Image 1 (tube, one colour):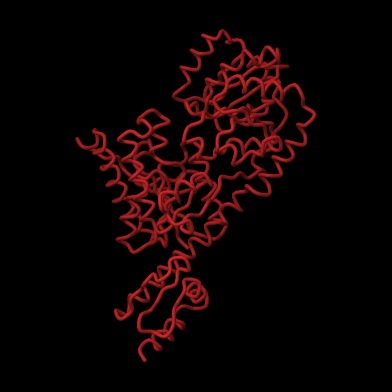
Image 2: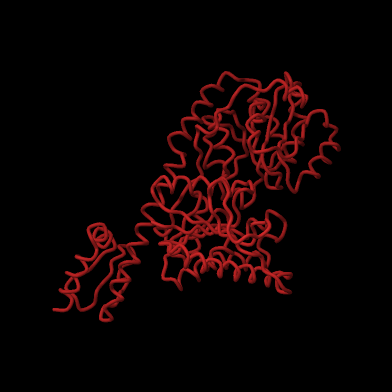
Length: 460
């Protein structure tokens, strides 16, 4: 089986998006599938037609040029046209069986158009909705005109894709409320490979260099976006320090909120309690995790965080780390309060300070909670288990495609979706009905002979 993945961006850029992509590709290759990879013009690096990164080959798409590429709406249309042309070129070169587009919708629409022309099934994987991501970054307002237009575009793409996947139950529920049949939507949950996150002892020299030697360290490692709620964590620090005088906050990473956070720390007069490291090389991140006693994920309550599950809490569990997180929907789907982690009221600085202080003051339950978290990711959230969920979807789409190919060869056959619930295909003027399950069985049992017998029966 050959799958052409259409991506927003990829390695060597580092983000939760690229880490998920790479994990999916590794497991699909382990299943014996051939994967091909194409990035949109949003992959912000100097353009080359093809690029190999760590053994993975990527088709790159050039940025749109000209006047249209400078204005809102026209810019997005130009981007999609560029992506569509590049997908068509890749289809001709690698002859995939399936085109699999990943968020945002700017990838899905070009993939659907190119896939339709090539007669290929198209899967759209929703990792987050474009309209919610834009609202969280401040480029649009929730329920504003741009938000509503983008939401309509997402729904349009979901209806026209042959299959839909998404990363969590929160997004699946939202997709179904848009009128998409529930059986069309498959959840491929975020996961981790626990063996890749083995934690070690703190590096004494690194701890000393950061002023953390002998301290109780709260930590956050990742991108500094407004929805992460890091300003709340900083505001909670004075209250935490009253109860835990040895507490320090370690913030590793960077992003749009970095300067605002530094200004807030200065305003609060807690410069001696907060350490900013800036971004660190990926191969050194584990050293910083090893310094942390308690990881804190204070995401604020907005649509994006209520619907989308992050990777960070799963990584914390895999490393055997204690964690405290806000009780937004995305966290509740991953964290069992009091069993694998501890939740506080999202958006409540006082409750954040109270919960963190309480967790730090009583460590007797830590070993059991750490073990429960590690067991959860090892048994329920491995990438091998998650990616296996693609198998049924892909096989069904390929079976449907062969069914349509065979029936199309005889213009006397018309396909009627008689009962969408049982998904049975009626062959008018014939003495039998053919279900999708029957067809899938036939495909696995030598399609050609079976089709020949059907055609003979049909002609009599």
